[in-house]
Length: 169
Image (cartoon, rainbow, N blue to C red; front, side):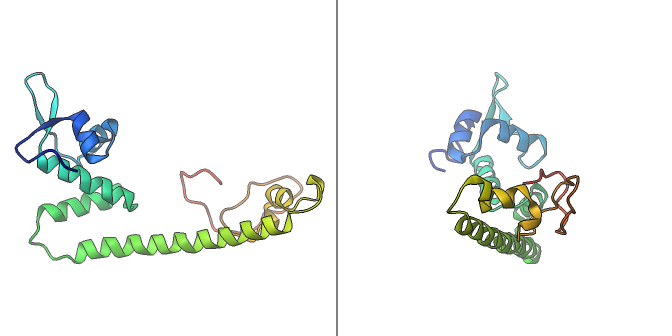
């Protein structure tokens, strides 16, 4: 992010290019209070100065690292009061690291399942294809990534509950 100093205010399109955050997302961040409303021109156009651009870059980087909006809100509040102890920021980062480590373990198990599926399905015809069999019958899947939908005539397999609001994979 270069090209704008704290004295130079830029319109939203330029702020988008400089920060790497899309225009609708910038407006959304303003709407939910992550980004303070910027100064407006006489023509009522948004103009972002250096502080807003740095805040946008902070938010974008935090989102790239997978922090949720509320965690970012807390981190921004901490950033706005630099005299506070760092414990709260550390706790938020530790919690995110724990989530990432759990996701990595899940992805490694998923990788192993896919490797087994591919290794055992290299020969024959589709009617005997291991990939097709496992995808058709979740009970044959060794990876507990979600509950399969109930299929008449088949017993449901156990697995962890899927998070609310997510589509089954």
